[in-house]
Length: 81
Image 1 (cartoon, rainbow, N blue to C red):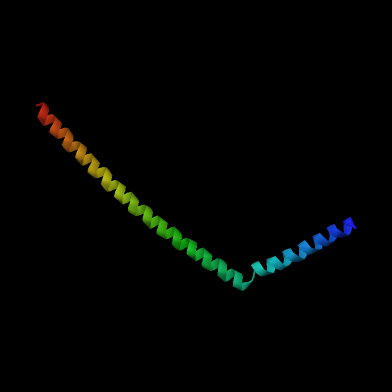
Image 2 (cartoon, rainbow, N blue to C red; image 1 turned 90 degrees about the vertical axis):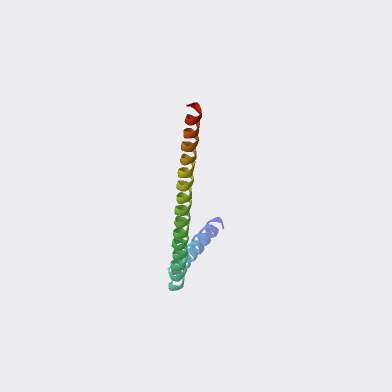
């Protein structure tokens, strides 16, 4: 009884796995994989664009901060003299 249950589970699993491979390898499934991959690539491109914008903004902020510090340093020197 126990052996027949294990054998039945093994055979069922094998059949289920074979059917699963057929479904996953079908043309319709391949279309789905292609569309999902295309969407992921579009998402990656958008994220990279957003990162570039943030980096540019950070560079501008850094340049402005350096300018402010230079102006304050110059004003402090003039006060000292």
